[in-house]
Amino acid sequence: MRAHLPLLTAAALCAAACAGNAPMKDTKPDEGYAAVIYGARFMTPAGETKSGLFRFNMEGAGGRSAVIYRMTVRPAETVLHVVEPDFYRLSVTRNILGFPQPILKVRIAGRTYRMPFPRDVLRKAPLNVKGKKVYPMGVFEVRLQQALPGQTPQVKIFLEDSVQTRRTIVQDVIHQMMDPRIQPSQRDITIGWARALQTKLLELLAEAEAERVPLYKTP
Image 1: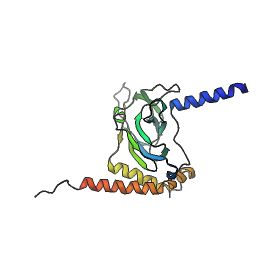
Image 2: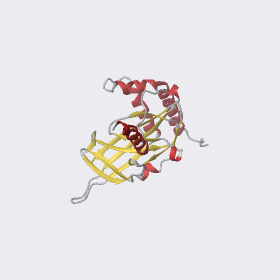
Image 3: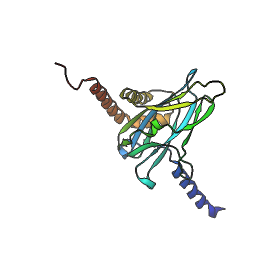
Image 4: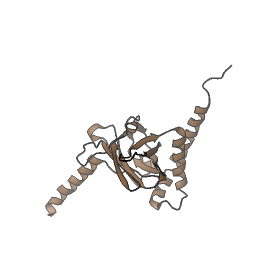
């Protein structure tokens, strides 16, 4: 049995790499890594819920050797994840053999729904995630729509990435540094990225100000 352990370990590692890796932990900007931030809101016909989950992949630009991260989205949660610098596209998840899974499973308020992976997310421009910097992606809006009797409810998902939304999630992560409810391990990661977060917040404030200033003055 012991002779087969290395083979089993290698197979497990290969399966994990094909399906996608979990984001890294305990890494800081001075080590050359980058960070992404996203949040989520899950809405039902009865209002917002804090019960739910879905997953997506971030896939790098290296072809077969590209880095793939498997990301988890939960409602009412803004997270900072550490990743390798790269150009990432948002993608469907993959099975353990590496094949894409076009049907997305979404868990909302105790029930699971299946839907095609949202085109709005797939069509987003690649994320240029640079080393030692923070990239706020936006907030995933998950909406369970009211269904007629006898019909299956439909789920809609889109990524809200306006300047205001991206600024809000950066501020949310900064506030986590002082929130006693946040797990100490997550708080330590956030504190390590404090300077990069402040820099990104200033950039977003400048971007929002530029949007308000007209390109020309009327005579």
